[in-house]
Length: 422
Image 1 (cartoon, rainbow, N blue to C red):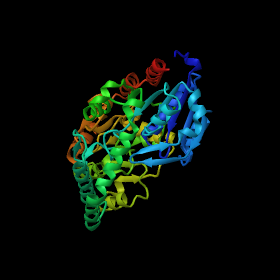
Image 2: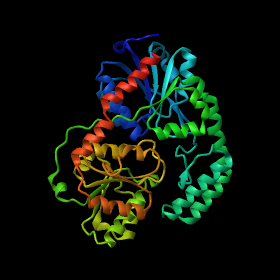
Image 3: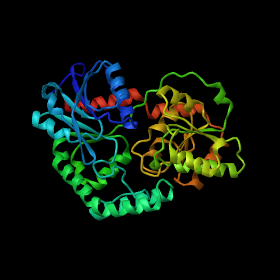
């Protein structure tokens, strides 16, 4: 089948249950595809985030809500409720972890082309992190024993970070010995039933790291085309915030209160910088206001005057902060599949300091658009000190980022893959 681009009908599947980097990138890709006058429909979970559904409808994209269930770590959407829509589409695009949909699509129409995004490690890791106990990148195929030990180490990490009490963690570690095998077998059986390799015609990995790690765990994936296509990022025109521009020691942490994002490293880095005499340092933390653990840690470290906790902000408000801060931090301790936050910062001319986990070294040009370092308090303290003393060429940062993450070019590569299979 050779369908003209202007007549191509695309059915996208997106769970929409939360709004993370994958969902924001999906919205940006939809905006780019709609600008090319493509016929696009979206099927989502009937409990999808209201703002996510609303943003899709604003693009005048036909939207359908379907029942769903969580199958192990995957979102199983009842796409068979819209069998006529499936039959009339040229391409089925699985946008995130909705892999069980592929088998259902093939049952409706065997010759349909299914293209699936790989935004995470859901195919190779029951926890979707591919980080063994948050200590190292997991390079071995998972097993029951490995899964149990990984969860126990993860809970230990939570104790050391004061996120939970020792008795609670000990109870959870004991529970892992009982519940762990059940969870692992559920994930393993579900993945086997999905029969992904036989039902997905091509994959889109958002980074070389994601592609390589999935192939390391599942070498038979090499029999399926896997295209590396970075996430598109559309940056709106912004107004300048003159008050922030006056403060050249304002640092932004925009990754939320998740331990895996290294939020604790950001907080302890502030304390170390204060010890070293940088009294004018100010860390702005998005999506952290009201988080008991973060507020407790700020008080414990006595850095209340140097940390500003903010709620979740609108996208444009986040970008205004990014554009006017001195630095953006992303000290992730788990391997990032892409790294949207530092890419956004660079497109706005702000250097980013990131950990060397996952795909983050692919996002930053070390020494040009920011620094790449170990995810430790000591390493980030040194990197922030160096970055605050560096005269960054913000226009060079923007031009470098635009050359590497040109959204129109990314959309063209993505569409070329569609045309090959439509």
